[in-house]
Amino acid sequence: MGTEPVDFCREIETYLTKKNDGHLIRVTGPSFEIVSRWAEQGIPLKIAFEGIDRYFERYYAKGSRRRPVKIDFCEADVLDAFDEWKRAVGATSESRTPNPESRRESLPAHLERALMRLSDARAKGVIGEPFDPIIDAVAHELDAARAASGGVRGDARKAMLDRLSQLDTDLLEAARGLLDDPTRATLVREAEGELAGFRAAMTDEAFARARESAVDRLVRQRFALPTIAFS
Image 1 (cartoon, rainbow, N blue to C red):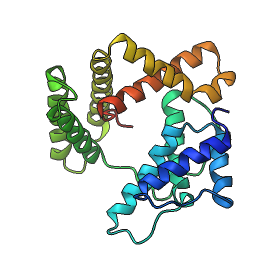
Image 2: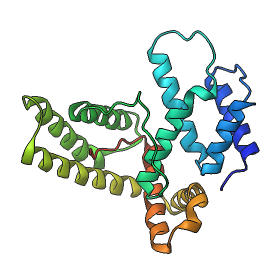
Image 3: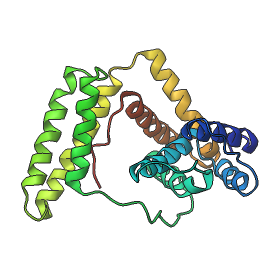
Image 4: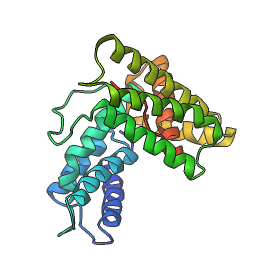
């Protein structure tokens, strides 16, 4: 399914070395078996990289590093990232016990992070003025969420979540509008590559939906955009 295990392991080893500031930690023995399973499951390399990044982000947050990180420590985060990717693109597989270190953030925290990322992308010139109404709307919802004592509940929460879902759709539509035809074609090919390991199990209709969802994820990455929708 997708990349051959040996090549996949080599790419992971190279990425892990980079994350470890050039310190080489070989992916051999039990570590090779772990990473080989990722390849056999069809985990796209970029998704594996995202999982590794999550572990390192949490590791750095604990203070100064003391020793290089082995790939074994990143497994739970890689599988979490893979599960999220599968849900996003509609690829199905057996369920898995969630990473106990994964914590669902609150609605205000989610909105604050989304607003920060949107504002940062705007300040860096990655996105332009057409995104200002979306940024303003997210800021408005964040203020409402903060002002609600005990949190937003009931019909008010449902209405807010519906608005966030629509804002997320608007965000992706605006971002797609920034793509020229060659770039969009490149993203479509990349999305198809990510889904290659699951193509045989999908109908044409399911694959088309999954490809569009995968393209949306790649568009978010390209413009450093957050997911505004919250569930």
